[in-house]
Length: 508
Image 1 (cartoon, rainbow, N blue to C red):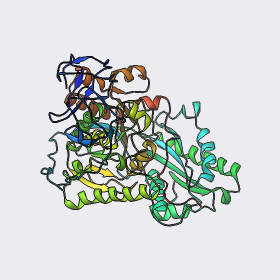
Image 2 (image 1 turned 120 degrees about the vertical axis):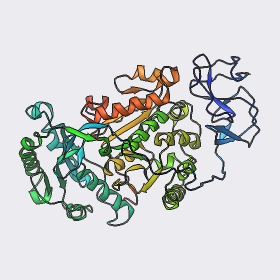
Image 3 (image 1 turned 30 degrees about the horizontal axis):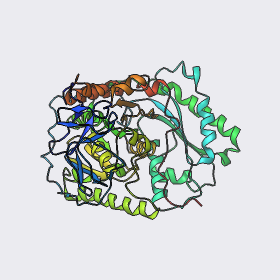
Image 4 (image 1 turned 90 degrees about the horizontal axis):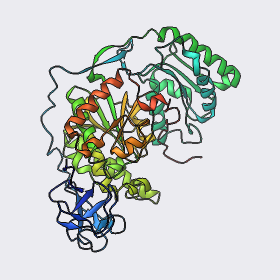
């Protein structure tokens, strides 16, 4: 990392922009780059270190992040007013950087997990009340509300009763991608190991029929799984009463769970960034990449998603693919997204968000180059469709939107039993039934939002800790949270409203 007394951070020797470590006033001498700032440069924003002609590539991380929309002089602020997107060729070089099979550690790390009777390993012990359609959402919440406060005080080993509700399930096609994505998502949550018991509730006449869910997932009625519809039960009151009774019957047995040492290979880590800033790709994301690699070396699984936010950096992932087939799966999803956004009058460069831009990110290319750093350097072993089970050990990619709750809903449905979420602006995302660990990219935001942030990755910027050591710290924190230590979002009971399946297709 750059020396603390320097005003800027250079990420690659070939870059023609550097990043401000602090607010820089116009006319400030920047001795490490032998330039004088022509403009005010905000913390996390970019400053040109050489003359860049209009139309020329602007480079950061040693990669193209866009093209100058006008002539840029050394010392000028580089942002939306003079930097824009442009087409350029990416060398996918399938498998060029793939290494031999990952060498697993001889003595893998362990955590204190919950082993279900069928062998699945959980990091939490919740009961889920899952709605098949928006029409049964309120009933699911009424049932879950009966177990708030002191209702579970005699069952200390149960983390809570969680309503899993959403805004779709009807007024949609009964086949096709949209239907399949919702079906896979609901079934993924129903079979998630962090749910020791599940109650599925429908209305009765919706498109997403309870029978479809049961048939696809092969669930059977039992002491820890029940399914019913409001219409069959005779209305709201009787459905709520029956649901509460079902859950009360589950409590004594589910409370008997005991944590035991299990290998870290049983962890499935969801990797997410949101509310990003100019330091996301410098501190938190690469440090999380180190932790991701450590988990893979321990035999575990790390899932990277947000396909629109690897756009422009996908060639860095295809180079790490274990086979051309895996690499081409990713490119197929990229092409799908280009067609999908164009069909809705949009474009893949409609990111970053206003908050991202305020934090110093200008183009989706720049944002993507920082985002892929969360995936470390391990081989890419599989590319999954949204909400499909992550059954392959190692580093995998899941096709998800960039919108944080939609992306993570897919990963959790795919089996993620712990989440690491990097943020520079200050996202407060929580996820039940899966603990969400927040990684702050800079010390100022961490101090301002310390009640919500779990780890300050700004220490790497401050010069206190290196990226490798910080990544190891994150990995050990993952093991602690997986063993039962509460994340900051859990202390606020965040996560009941963050279940948002990806909706595709017409609403009819």
